[in-house]
Image (cartoon, rainbow, N blue to C red; front, top):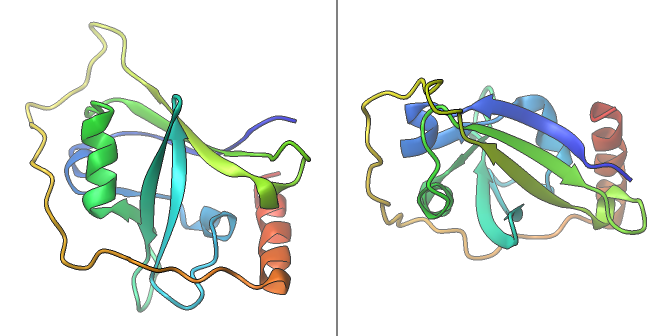
Length: 155
């Protein structure tokens, strides 16, 4: 089975220092938000699993982003820079089903001489008062429908 690319983008100063905006169309591929505005899951980068929180706006256009303390730890811990390309994949489980899958990212650094980096520096990791401490799991029926939609969108 092959990993399925979800999105790819060149990192900007906002992506590095504050939040990474992700395409709305891939929201059904993430764990269920269950009516909340945030969901926590793990990204594999190299051999390490990193906890990440995806949040959406409470009203209007959802605008999903990876942000907050966990996103900044990922950025700093992996020395991401403006101009790096991040690609996120949904990895099928060994049984070939998405419900037993996880997510992984690849980061490609620009070749020397092709760096389109600004003079911005990384901001320090900020401590957030509103850490998510508990997230509910989706029910089986909702999960099946979400996985079917995710499979359709990733084709």
